[in-house]
Length: 224
Ligand code: MD3
Ligand code: FE
Image 1 (cartoon, protein in one colour):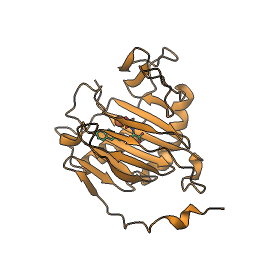
Image 2 (image 1 turned 135 degrees about the vertical axis):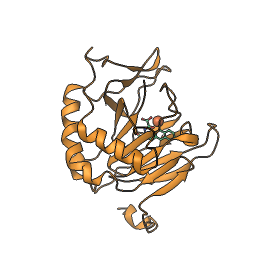
Image 3 (image 1 turned 45 degrees about the vertical axis):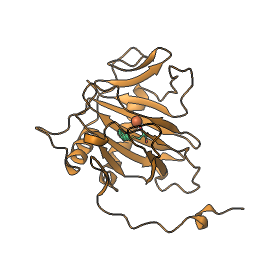
């Protein structure tokens, strides 16, 4: 039997706020005070708009399952990627953005220095669900109309390794470990950096027990 636990180096002490780039900032544990409100809201919204595995324009089925809430939702099929006001699976509008989602996104953006005129006003929240082995290959988020607004990302459940690349696909990405409750805010000069997620490990003792052997990532965007 292998106990991978003992092979890992000791964890670095975690700061309250850590710059990942000139416009990218990690807020360790920032979402923890919101978790008790986020989990039932995720349950409710996925009852209306269930997780699904989308097909990419290239014909691959994504290993990450996703759904959306808010006025716009990101979707993909053989014809391309786009934001849509309705869920293609039901023809209905996406569920509205739950209140605690919006509060968390706005507070995190403000804590990272993206307060703007009246603060971050996301109109889309993409909800990604990772089972062990699921991954997200390097990509840019550029389907949003306004690249001036930041993106707020919230990690829940099992830990993952985030890949933070450069403005060219070939730039060697940095590895950023993300755990339950971590929030990352990306904007300004870092907004169009390539990024991805390494295949999720099957961690035997997930800290966030209510989510079981899964990781959920919320990304808040101003898409329209
Ligand atoms: C870095 N999701 O859904 S969000 C995605 O963990 C996506 O599910 C990842 O990438 C996940 O598109 C991570 C983090 C993220 C979002 C936008 C970025 C990182 C970014 C834009 C620029 C640079
Ligand atoms: Fe992305």
